Amino acid sequence: MTRDRLPPDFELRLKDILPQLPESIFGPRQFQCFRINTLKISIEEAHTLLLNRKIDFQKVSFCPYAVIIKRGQFKLSPFSDLVDDGLLYAQGLESILAVMALDPQPNQRVLDLCAAPGSKTSQIAMLMNNQGTLKANEPIRQRLYRLKSVLQLTGAKAQLSSTDGRRLKEHNGLYDRILVDAPCSCEGRFIINEPKSFAYWSVRKIKEMSHKQKGLLLNAGRLLAPGGTLVYATCTFAPEENEEVVDWFLRKTDGRFGLSPVQIDGVKTYPCLAQWNKRTYDLRIRDAVRILPDERMEGFFIAKFTNSL
Image 1 (cartoon, rainbow, N blue to C red):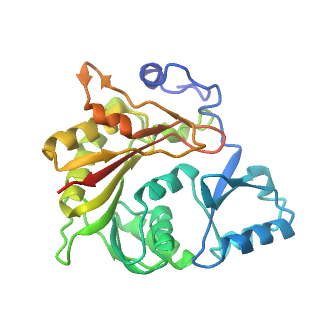
Image 2: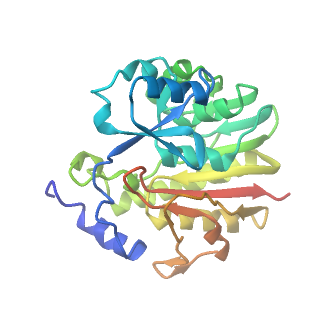
Image 3: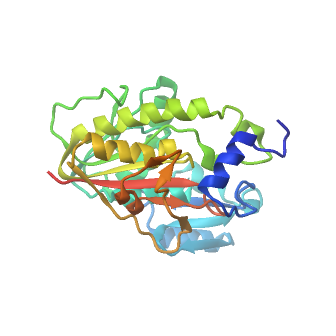
């Protein structure tokens, strides 16, 4: 495998998933998104700080607490202390979108089933204003330490647990909102001149991830209260980890769950697949969304379920 070539099997698959590939889809990202942490600073104060320091930033039309900054400014501007103090938090714009779809509210019961490193957990806590119950689960101990440090940095409050998300049980009541940002094959994060980003890719890994994702999603469904919202997200293109998992879950739960449209103006998307490898998917999958990578964000998939019982 050369430094300027992605895995050939991956490229072949991607042509069937996304026939018209933008040239920059796997190039290095030119911009970094930062989330303004309103647990520590207001949006207006953050904008003023950046302007006073002559940091050129872009606002994000669909997310008032996000700013986009060109990567070249990081070393040239007095910027790092804002991040070190937790006023700004580096978080992918696509990651922010998953929590926006979840729409957590103060005083709700919310579960982040696959929480580390903590970006989405701390965003959830921020939108809840640290009011209510937020449980963050991370089964891998080393990643749990990273989660703790992010929560401490951002001032986010959450109950922590370290259990396989497929076996997590809850004895204190069901949840109003659950996020399953599932471990995946990470195809949306591949960068063509960074072989490390795709060194572990294989079709076998995709199948392993799909099996695990189905278990996580099914258990999350058991923990969701009637009328509650469950968001499933991955950072991969693989249909086996996206449409197939959603289709399987809808069939497995026998009509208990419906899909709500994920619509975000100003984001480049492309249609979910109706079929893959001769398997036809539930038509409702068109309400999920595939996010196209660009200079601002990585490839992503988001599906939003509602417990209709």
